[in-house]
Image (cartoon, rainbow, N blue to C red; front, top):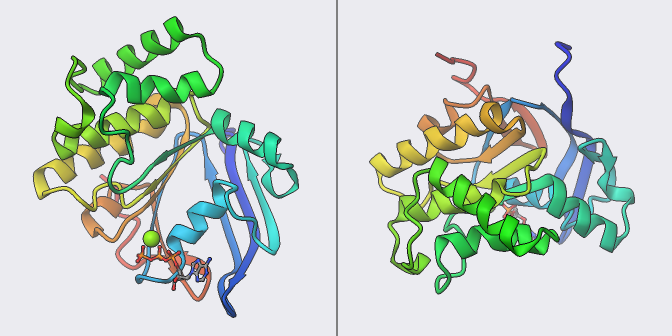
Length: 230
Ligand SMILES: Nc1ncnc2c1ncn2[C@@H]1O[C@H](COP(=O)(O)OP(=O)(O)OP(=O)(O)O)[C@@H](O)[C@H]1O
Ligand SMILES: [Mg+2]
């Protein structure tokens, strides 16, 4: 097992909605330092899977452990706390507050986690510097797509999560920016000692992951052409 700690252990996850079985006995294990790409047709349940891993919806069957804690057994407040402390998320459009600066957008995640204001801003500044995001007085709305996604990565990382989840993080970017954001994202597990699960339609993005899986018939299977890693 290499001694690397397991940050995500999902086993036998089953989720039905609107008379359909979207997830059907799904298993997924992710270790610290490891990245996994998940692809699959539109509507196959990829975003639903991430939502389950975040604990925002509870699957009817199976077990989901994040940082050693069973999410399906946590009550709402404990679940929210666990999510804030151990999980980071990046979505397709960054989902940042447009009128705030990148610094404020990043610090806010730490402030919500109970970090003191001065420390939250210092940590945010450090991360944004490392991720090369300009953080003057410019509102986030005026940043480029790539800068916004790097801000979203900073916000996902500020609470030092065990697991980072990303849903189509490069879906709204042009090719050059996509490559730059993808390179940054896949450097995250090693640099910040966490696990990473990225949902993507983009084969060039998926090819950067340690493992490339496809969601099919409610289960994760080895994706074709995956496993090549330089
Ligand atoms: N609460 C719900 N009620 C009804 N249908 C739902 C609900 N949640 C998800 N679905 C349906 O489940 C299917 C899977 O949705 P999901 O968003 O997970 O797909 P996806 O794989 O992320 O697709 P895409 O690649 O287009 O983002 C869709 O057909 C969606 O309409
Ligand atoms: Mg989706």
